[in-house]
Length: 295
Image (cartoon, rainbow, N blue to C red):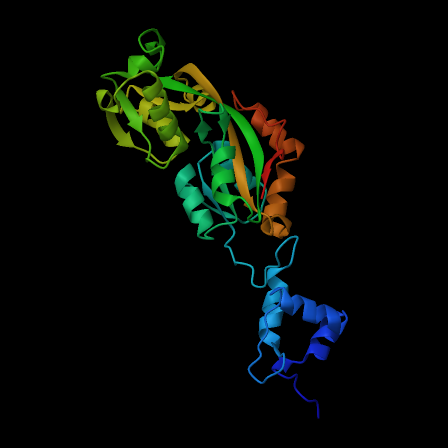
């Protein structure tokens, strides 16, 4: 019958455990570098306390004993090319496109394995990086580039003469996006830069996808939408370019090696994906997979 290990170690037993001489144990005690007790008149060391002490002094990557289980869902911002790739790749992943910030909140709560975003950072004139660094630094995530897209004002044909810039949206009917959406955040940033009060715009219907934003203009529900060139041209609407934006995917690093995400990523590196992107005006996918952040 095996004898269970004692709850407390002697000086000699601790020295054997640490593979050091007993003299070194006394030195550690004298300098208060190792937890101990003298309750019995001699030095004793709680086994559990010593194990915790050893763990607190580990360096390098931390072990994850119980990795968080995440459903195979892509969260965040909507993109027509991403939506197409999810279907055509056969990855069997679901999607919940609620906007860039909504996706980050849900991703942080482990409600998906990836989240799409396009958050402009005026201070550095860049996209997504500062936001992800501030919130997910040290976590097992990676931010990869999905594509670049051209965004601007989608208008009724011929209206580009009357609405040529953000300032011309004053008193116009404009498609609204949810506050968590990257496009709505970008519009607010541009209005601030132009010193225009958002209340000077007449926001009409609120939509949750890039496709619906263009459709609202097509159906006459609004005069303008801050949307994608690809969808303006699909519906034969006018388009005034405003900015090129980087659309990224924040991915759980462990999920990168699981079949669903592997299938999606491999498909996005295929000729079929490149050919589809070439059919979407304003898209560039040459940088797909470029790592912009590795937590």
